[in-house]
Image 1 (cartoon, rainbow over the protein chains, first blue to last red):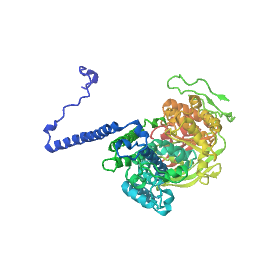
Image 2: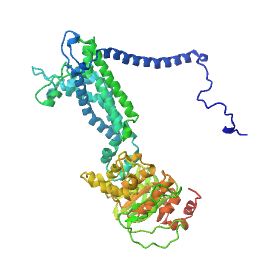
Image 3: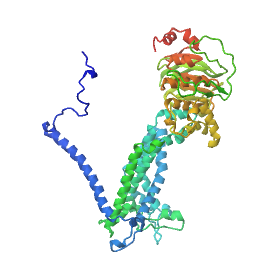
Image 4: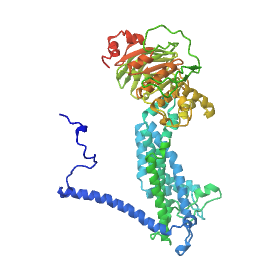
Length: 325
Length: 300
């Protein structure tokens, strides 16, 4: 005879509690060790992350004053005379802007070619591995390569020139060009993955309306991967903000933003400066700076930026920003 | 002029397809209704057959050497609905997609034979021109992730070299939505995202998008198979209205639907065209035993 649910006793309410399981204490010691390692590693990483954020927050907030963000750095013997971090902040923003402005068209065009054309296949493979090589190159190597390029006489107009007239290969445009290579891989990958995830029927719908492939890409596909592109840009920005080596070698690491020449915008692009990362390096106990406390404050600001951007990436990925399509 | 407006949307008895206002932009072609006993439950729509639009002659398609359509010949006339029926994998969809050269997008597809649109070989036409003249509606509603207005305007915009302004496009967009019987439901906010519409509304938006550039032929690949019975009823009624101004080719698995909407029926089996004739002939007096078995539900 079959038993129906209604015939069962209704004494206990439904429970989500799982049934009895074997106890780890009865396991072999090797299995117990693996279990313990898994728990320790997970909890340990949480502890490390918490320690970084809390310690940097503790040291940073101590010296973080609103005035610090709005005064220019100065040369001084004691910590009170060294000014604020305005120039590194502007330098970071400017470098990010240049890097993304250069990387964006390159990465999106590349991703469109790979996802929508991608023929011949050997060429597509070559393009993808080239981007992987760029992604895998250590930033200090990129920086050195950039330095050797921008030191050429050909590129002299693009960089800062000392009084004597020697070409130095250091400028916002030189550093920004190399930064664009840092931002390119994540931006490319995000856009390509987005395009490959667009269902085929979307393209067919556009073709069936008598559209060319390029019109389909411009009007339909790029519109529907907007949130992927936004994710890629955000990832790229956080990579640029966090990079130090390129700044050290190519931006000149000057305390103030120095301009070069009389033309308003070009003189800024040709000029040198510093970013938050190089400021932290210079003023840390490892560098020659006299303001270790301000290094902590700047490091904290940097950390907040990068963590904020990562949060933004998660948010875009979850579609909470893109649901308004 | 206004046509059929018994009941507006809103309450209607369950199971009965809603009757909605469809505004025609020109009076129907005045052709005397032929006397025929079709479906006693439904008054047969007057035939509006006109000139020949598409002629398929001896067309064969194969995918990587495997034949999908085997030397099919048939013709499609202005003002009538041709239903392609047959079991799965019999080449109906391939045939349909060849009519606006979408099969070309599959690299392994090979073709022999001719398709003539108004006497011109469609493979001689520029693909974008052809597809603007032979529009298509797909099985799954597939509006673009943009506003309702932009979805319909997309079809109109790229046709012209100069990008037209919204003010110029608006009457055309509204006209297309009206012909697709969707305007009354969306007139309040054309800037709403198209993906927020219901499935049936999305499919009618796709129809509006397809008919906006005034094509000569409308291809429909199982347009109702992803929809509920009420939306299906709305779309079937719409097909009946649309055929006044263009030729419609519809692929369907639903024999009852083919019977309701079609003037002509083509039955395909394993790539062969087994039977082609008026709906009455194919359903009432099929010549081939295969057709009789299929329309009576013995297999399929």
